[in-house]
Image (cartoon, rainbow, N blue to C red; front, side):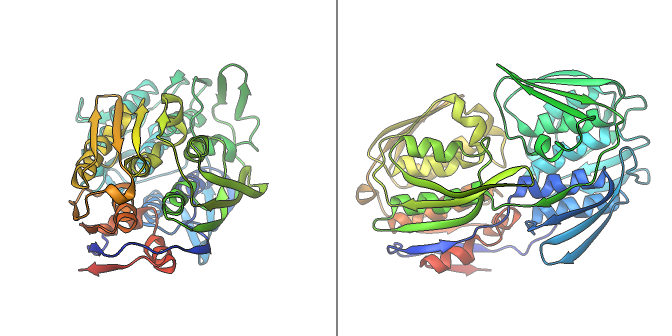
Length: 448
């Protein structure tokens, strides 16, 4: 996908607001809906789809693999499932994953055990810098081949396994790797077992809950997932909630902006996705969940937020797995609270769209906030908003949507002027971000 490039300039501190909003739909669930619909039998329906660049990359990739996908209405799609093992592409077909690490790892999982697949895969400049070593090693255990050998970054070629057999996998904190193993296992012979010590986001498992012959989950001291391969999958009907990660930026803005309040409607409240909210509530944030209901096997509800006085944040490693995407905005929050905040267990942030530890440190340094980083920990010496050094915050072209959004929030809270390059990358996950910010009173200028 080729978005038109633009830079963004912010100016003026945001004024108090009291608003009711609805943020963009959940990206993780949107992408998984299309992938699962494609390998299921019959016609699947997905409503309230996030129509962002990452999701459009998913749709285009699946169409190249022979899947019929119809846009029935805005944000509503029908997927004519081909069934397990039925995706097909001519030899050396090229698939472009754009900026999406989720699509890359999950579709590699599907392709690894789909018969007669030999495709070339790549991403954009940012994705091509990210290591795919772990997913390559896992899919190699199912028998897939990757060429060139020992090359762990895009572009490369995938040759699927001729006789995939189930594996035993002890999951780490990555939901993407866990999902890739589930997808590969669904079309493998025998049984695959996954033991999960720390519960990462579980949208894939929830979407497959109606396929009890294919997947069984037990939750005792550890979560055990058993996948029986070569079992027909039922079609899915999904209504996608709003993205809790997209909502996090507006939550942060409201908490730190005096005399402000916001209601964010229909937000996904999956227990594996609300670590950000739990962490902030623990440190004094006025956040409430209301009107909670279960739809499409996912909890959702309204998030009510008011301006709050926070104490310094101390995030142990247990929070990382359930709030991975929110760490850049958490670093911003910490920088604007008086006192020292600490974030542990964050080594994996170095392999996101950018190295989110070092890049966020550079941004905090520009506003006079000190920080100390080790491989797995970041310490931030926060100041009150009134003590922040105002000036120009410069963000280079990192192609990292979370850092662009976090820098924007920092600028309008402090009254600094931000110059954010290639802000169009935000459209990969949150195409409504600027529109909503404008309704809240944020001042900015698009520079093409």
